[in-house]
Length: 252
Length: 379
Image (cartoon, rainbow over all chains, first blue to last red; front, side, top):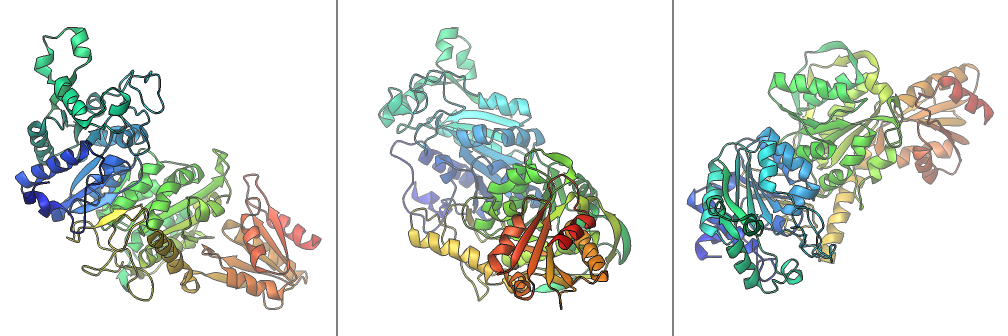
């Protein structure tokens, strides 16, 4: 983390809690850059998170109010706080398992209500903290500690899911697209309504090592290679398209 | 931290209210301005009245997607500064348990009204029961305390809901009103006073929100947005909310304090009422709706010359151990009529040397005075 952003870190916080090669540290910095660019007042910012690696991005590191809740329930806690005090800028930062598996029902209902919550879903496509089990976002065929032969099921397309449920700002970017991701977080911060950003984040420890992407740089390179914009996908064959991840702003 | 007297939001007078309606008014009088809930029989009228009343007076009402979301939104709102509540019945109360543990561990004031119905499971949704008494205390994992009150009239649905809010704010603990279907749907006259006493949560700028401040063991509680840069977590934490997930001392200290801060004050929390106990040789220990039919039975038996009295438990948790022990010294036999298989009878047995007879009924109906009198004659 650069010195200029240290003012956004809670005094007393020491080293990052993330594994080597984890993308969450990058995301932690990118969110703060967006906040810094917009000169947001941290005293009026509430960061709500659930349980899992990504829930530690804001809690306790960010120097605003942080609410580290129960597994899956971040959006329900955030809804209560935002409705009672609309002056708070409420950002929910949590993982894919937290927000879309155990918390999936709260996700679609929060999107439906279009309450002004800024949701950043750090998607590493796996349960990292508990030892690399399959998530609702794990790609079909991927190996995890509970799908040794490869995941037999389809993953959620989280952006389509929340768009269908009524979100009013939706985007997907990878931590390997830092400038786009910062711009998108800024848009979400300025947007009035339910905003959802799927931030793809590599997990070499639990995902990569089981899926031939053992070294952190392998996962980063893989994301750079696979993440393309919607317009870039237009000329591709179905086969070429299948291994790509479409990124961009889908609803703004 | 102190209490203050405020003008009742509902004009002074007498009203004809159902228990559920009276509880909603008690909440409003206590300053409740946030309600999140999910429909469930037999508590739904309470939520419907809150929807109307909070709209009238400028509070926040939201119907959530389930009971887990409801109690979670209540906790979020409480940290945003609200006096907040939800109401439910057995199945919803089961769903709420994890978040109730969160509220206990993060010391979040909130009120939960459980209008109990005949369980287990979906059971008989429209019928009465009181099978959630142990769940109120032990429903979430780990060791923690809650406060649970037991109303026996529409008046007490008003009074004890108000008190639940006050105790919850005073001790930073989840407080429950363990009503039942019979009380929730009972219509009777209640009195509303011109002024009500309300407690405000303790504030101290820069104070540690999660460790002992002062003799009562209850730390100050800032709200989000006050510039305190709060760190709230359901993991084990230190005085300022930093996670301490592998520090044995921090864990032991926190668990001990959240339990002691309630148990050390149990004398000011617990309320019981004695009826005809002075010369009694037998006692009925009862709570909730069953205390009404018990009192009728006790008075009838007195007319026949039987020396019987009644102890009514207005507070269920922390358990009124001293009041129960006192009765146990005086009488030869205690009967505990209740609409479950002896949940409170088992507690009573812990504190008395005399015989304790459990009069259980789990058929979805209230226990008739005749049933209680029959038992009193038999023993």
